[in-house]
Length: 436
Image (cartoon, rainbow, N blue to C red; front, side):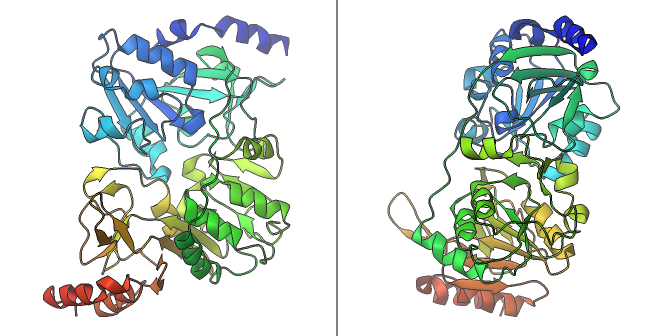
């Protein structure tokens, strides 16, 4: 332990000293959410303001912790890349000051770490243990595996004494670290979305399809949480999910999630990030039942698909009569991100007895108060989910199964789950376009 402590002291720096290790032209990757180092991020923003880093690149997603890097006066001075937008970053991406990075989580260690050779990793870690290891905790995601790649990397860690340590493949040894910054800040905690009446209706259709012994992947939002609330009467559920969310913890305490019948890594919850309340973070911390792994393991469809009865539940923003889905944009303007939707859609198909559900409200209301259908003849925007991969589409009006269906059958299925006010319009458009 003394050796590791001496090494720690030798690498301990102020935030300003640590970011001086970064050069113009470097390519920095930071984890999602609370995994992005808050103090290092603030120091990096101040350094970039000097205007001497025009070729510097910084990639993140779900930016909650480093909003200063997404301010126009900072973003204009370097290359800010974001793959899952939050209110902090939406405006700079919309104005093309920042750069939107379409990212599928399972691909990132290869596309960013290997093919684009991002050479600096900055991340939040839990305090060093007696063996000299730092846990990347609840956000190993894509940054940790990039740090572990063979090509030379600079690794700068921010040790937050309030950051949870977790089990799994997510640990960085002191000998691999170039600089250490110490900090103490409360993790950003997000209360669970309260399900609307529409969410509850959609959740009912999905919950009916989930059998005992199923393995859950739940995405972000009110609909996945609503589904969780309707699974209280199920037995022996399990978790293999990019995200651990509040609903999963609640189901565990109610005796619903036991992982006893899990076919892959039985007895273990497997995930790549955790986002929710402080209670959820405390639940995950040093919980031997839970393992946090990188995205190229958790989100790899061939690996996730080893779980029998894998149930994937995610939300989309628009879908057309053929089953093409928009998940990350409003029209062609980026709004959120793809995350692991496509990964788990494919994984559920590989899974014995698996199912993948894509949920959306049937309508939305614009700023002028006019009602529009979210089911459209053809999508207007970047397709996130191709029609040949779509399985179940769910609205508050029903559930449609599209996999393997002809275009005529798809059209009928989709019109049946559209809002009644738009069904005649959709049918006439389908005839005009010669879909039916």
